[in-house]
Image (cartoon, rainbow over all chains, first blue to last red; front, side):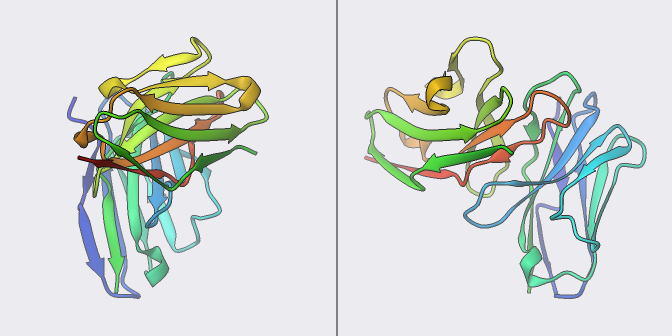
Length: 113
Length: 114
């Protein structure tokens, strides 16, 4: 069990650029979640996959955000035309369908300048 | 709708003293409740969880929490604080069914004084 891996750990980008983050869940976990955490706040739910199906998306996930999990394993979160308000920690988590609570990765900290 | 309120954004205790971090929740259905800890620039680590079994839940690092339905509370305690307990603590609630997405409180930053 290598845990949930996220890449990169840190990303600095200029406003208007596109960025993509990757999450590799624990191998036997079929559920995968993305959360966003801004400074001084608790994480907020963005979206959730069961296997390759994206089953729920938050209103926070604007049209500039897209998430995929093409083969039910790793997932990517893309932000197009980044804005300063997108600066946050993006957290990925995974679990089995039967589990309560899940395992978080270390996150990707995005800074938009 | 579910929500979580953590009373006190900052708590400071002396090393060896009791740690008490407060969490109240609102849920229209029986909840699952969680406490997570976050160290600087890290993800969240599960401390303990309540899933409708015993109301007193023991977790890692000597922490425990008690589910009190009448008070809609799930306060986190540790009898004796250690310097390594300094971190941000988050209480969270989720539904039993469905996606089990977590709704987090605002967090409480715990400082330990030597």
